[in-house]
Length: 152
Image 1 (cartoon, rainbow, N blue to C red):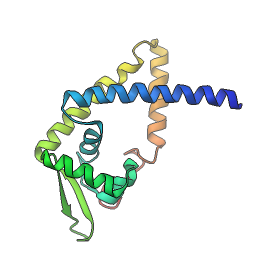
Image 2 (image 1 turned 60 degrees about the horizontal axis):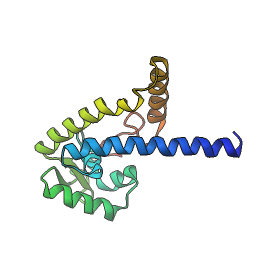
Image 3 (image 1 turned 135 degrees about the vertical axis):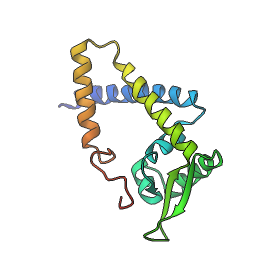
Image 4 (image 1 turned 45 degrees about the vertical axis):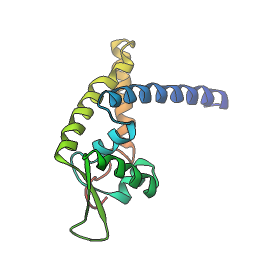
């Protein structure tokens, strides 16, 4: 691609990210969560995660994640615990209420995010789904390419 084409492509990706973030924020607000809180509880909804690894996966500093966890734990949605394998390692998991909320948020996001492609024709929707899946599946953040267990 030449420089001008890259700028246009980058511009389109920028605006696509804005569309996705706005839709995500709308769903989160309906559950009285910030997007960061929703991301946090969804990231640990199935398996406890090491705080340090979670911070890296979410692109946050350890301090910023700790502050987010503090705010979210005051809502009784997540808990910290020492790892059974290494007491120095802090694990984060959802509370029972947090897991229920995370499942509801995740289901609603999964149901409503595809609405961003509603104005595309059927073939373009399939292409968009295929490309989005390929990008997500090859991302180092994707559950299919990373192991969200204690070892992560």
